[in-house]
Length: 233
Ligand code: ZN
Image (cartoon, rainbow, N blue to C red; front, side, top):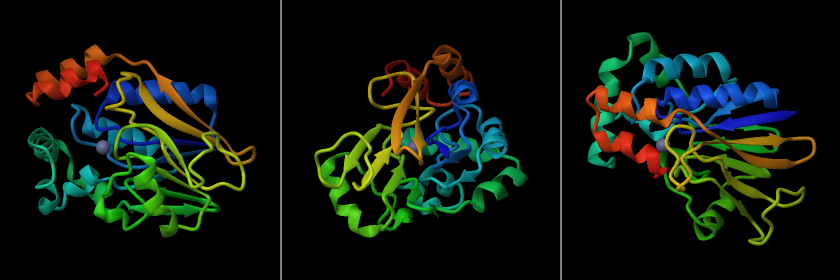
């Protein structure tokens, strides 16, 4: 079984469409979205519709949750909060209801899917290095936990050495971000996992950054949210 794992689309329609186009070639049996469908970008409604259409499992991220939780917005940067409040005015009641109903974690066989971290996913903690990852291995029993949230792709193994997904070792894998990569690579990021061979690889896909950035600026969203896409930061 071939599983595609996408995260942090953040209303970037151009990046999301490029990833969906790339998935046509990969032909996954199952598509998971780890959340943060909205926030930052200019096409929240379109991205929600595409997620519903193409993903078999969709989780809630912290930006999605902040649509319904004002307290959560206090932890956001000023621009993130501005984008969130802009998004709230764009979404139709029906799409808002869909976002509200999303769960924060899901288990499938020996895989765990969460947006942030396996320990209390609704606390929205970040895993950015091996040290962070080590703290979370005791919080789940599955072999692999797939995460997003930091927008930086990475593979963290429990033995601290392996960097190729092999059977018998446990991992926390960050699939990176579709709509706002932050590792200096402007291309959209997503993960592909083959549950039969246990091989994981991170895919990067070029998309029309100019259009995505221009739409953000034309929508009246903070212009830095557009410009950062050019740097992949
Ligand atoms: Zn995010």
